[in-house]
Amino acid sequence: MESIWTSELVQNLARLWDEGHSTAEIGRRLGVSKNAVVGKAHRLALTPRPSPLKRPPLRRPAAPAVATGSGSCSWPTGHPGDKDFGFCGKRTLAGKPYCAEHAAMAYVRPKNHNAA
Ligand SMILES: [Zn+2]
Image (cartoon, rainbow, N blue to C red; front, side):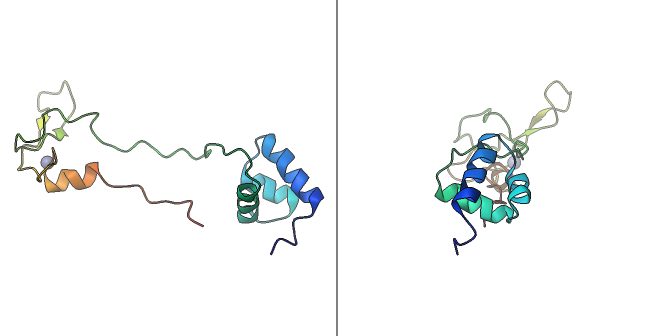
């Protein structure tokens, strides 16, 4: 499975990686798949770097405005400063500052798009 990785190719991979090229670009230059680049870089323990594709921030309130236990959902509705700004106010889930609907929105995990 590793037969494509000649020492020269590995050196080129490390150099292009250090130069900050994207994995897709490195793969294009080396004539291998992006996945092969990612996998090899991982096995070589090359310095991880942040993905160039930044996920947009999750839409969620900065902090619960009301302490848990009040019994009413503290999910903000509307926009701060608007006259209709307020809080959801529905019954909360046990141990959560939000109602079922808003807890699902607040605690949803982003799907892992990088899974191989
Ligand atoms: Zn709510």
